[in-house]
Amino acid sequence: MIYPTTWPGTFWFSSGKALFAVGDLVAGWMMYRILKEYRGMENERALKFASIWLLNPMVATISTRGSSEGLLGVFVTALLWAVLANKIVLAGLLMGLAVHFKIYPFIYAAAIVWWLDETKTGNATNVTQTSKRGSILVRVLDFVNPQRVTLAIASITTFVALNAVMYQVYAWPFLEHSYFYHLTRIDHRHNFSPYNTLLYLSSSPGGSQSTFKLERLAFVPQLLLSAVMIPLALAKKDLPSTMLAQTFAFVAFNKVCTSQVSKVPA
Image 1 (tube, rainbow, N blue to C red):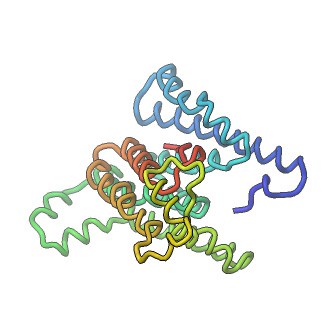
Image 2 (image 1 turned 135 degrees about the vertical axis):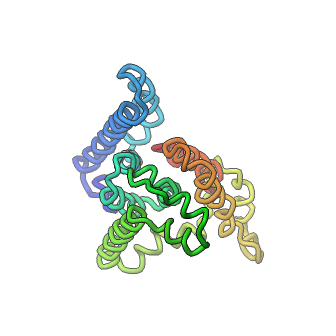
Image 3 (image 1 turned 180 degrees about the vertical axis):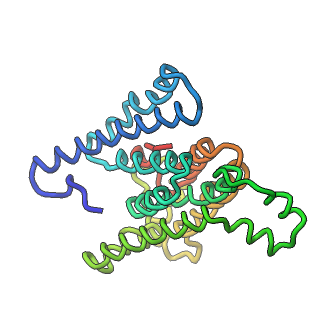
């Protein structure tokens, strides 16, 4: 993505900060709507919960220093709203856009797909009884419902189209810095990650000669917990709480965890 804060001139840098701060406000407004419409909260109570984000000094500081996490907060909260409102095509578009914007929202796909059964979308029939009596093939066919297929097609199409455009503009450096860089990244400065000391030792002279590449394996427990175990255990019960737990687990076990990474929109 191309941000105003990367363009030359004071005007663009300042306007970029303002844009990211507006993103924080919009994300807070989306949280307020979700709490009212899908949690049944009164105005005052919903506003108090939304204020945890809106009045958080870390949230304000990260955006006003020129970081774009406020926009990602809008995408993620809008994605949650679209799923809860059963606007599946819109949810797919937002998923593809969010993952293109910053790669980590892909962890929410598993929770959303697991949540999207007929009982949640208003198309419940005798699917549950049929699945219990049927073979494994029948259960698989029941799982692949129209909502899940629509979400997958919309999100993948959006993601591929945006990446194709960026590849045409930047070629290989786009793929390197957007995706492959995360596999080899060793960032031990201002890092609160549990892997911080190990990454520091790995970055020292001679440390990278080991056949054990910590920076490539650190994703394993992180992704197993945030993208597999938590969605399977919790998603069907409560999607918003599941996405919050996924975000917390992803950040807690991320190999690079700075103040910027700690600002999570869930």
